[in-house]
Image (cartoon, rainbow, N blue to C red; front, side, top):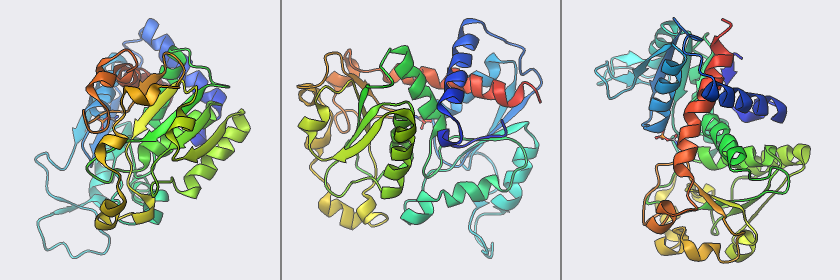
Length: 334
Ligand code: CP
């Protein structure tokens, strides 16, 4: 495997193999499998789980990591093309990224969406520019439009919870957040659940419909796997018999890059903070998923996060396990 950028680059069978490998490495550790291998971790955006789950995964396989982020004691990083660098930044990513990559056997890169231009973010332009600068294997640790490691972990978590693939009903719900958030997690989750064969409903307020390109990509995955994908603003019908609600916040695609316009259509916070009444007609034992970090009392209530429905910690733990499998496949035979 030379890169891990999008679950869409893999068949459902290949993803299931990775998840099986994650389970095997969990039960039967191989602490020398990646001895001598180095993973470079470039964080152009913040993280808790992604950073330490990759460090832990690599350490458990006998390898090591180093981390670079703009907050560290490095020369300021410039990313704009064609810029005259007479400001604070003393180093351009065009040199910095290949240098960083050259010190590792593989590189993980995180660069959140700029959220200025929807077409640029849907095309993942910045991430493709970054990866075009490296000739080592690379891993998408969340780009403008994808978070494949999160989705791989979420697939494993659904398997571990025995949530059916075919016939399993997952609601991907918009939830409140003070800022316009990236489309990466909803896009990746929608596609993952569709590829897994689930019946997926995107529940969102008016003005927050996911872009056609994301819906069409997920519909193609669903058609191949026997699942289905729809979207609605009708919570009662969406939640009917739902087995999993996956909450996420995203910027209004209708007013992308225009916060003032978005603020005018944004619903009131309490109406889109996930809480127990949402589950009135859901399947009994319906799970609550979220990639974290989650804002308590804003995106989801304390009762839900602290209650039996929540599997958010299990999702985060799965990150480490599936990334072990990913690194093993990418690096053990190199
Ligand atoms: N879910 C996730 O990617 O968490 P971090 O942003 O903390 O890495």
